[in-house]
Length: 187
Image (cartoon, rainbow, N blue to C red; front, side, top):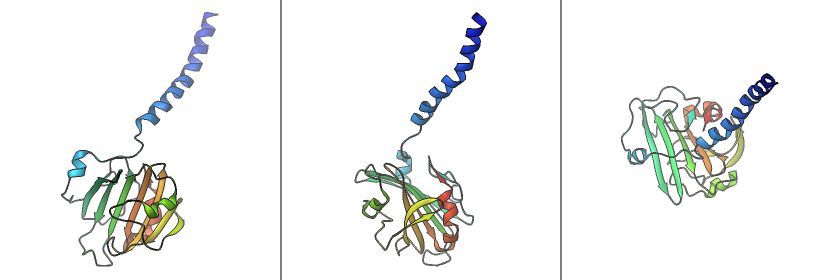
């Protein structure tokens, strides 16, 4: 009789442990990746640039080759936090062959729907031009042509989850890889 109770307890233990472990893991994940104080104050560029984990809490699954420099872009303002990384090559910014990629996460508590991105209080990379909603890399994104401030290429953004926005600016040579870049981003 005692052996039956022990066996029953052993059979239930892994299920109970799994139920306890899932909420603990979910609670450990921050709702939105934010920069450290050191990242906010950082001004120098990285040469060579950081890799796919350049932004703490974000994995850029597909990072094209050919970048020479990189830099953290982070700020806090208007109740939101912007945190990203820019990769670029040696070419001048106005050169249409300039390879550049900017991936950013925006912690904006009001973000819930894609249409809100047009009115997001962003410092750089606003969706102020002609925007369209399309599916790229398996995600429904708001997109527009890159303007002069962002360079030539394609700018895209989406609401990953409530309060968390992700934007990607791919320079013109990287636009053919934009679907793979967007699909590979994981928070």
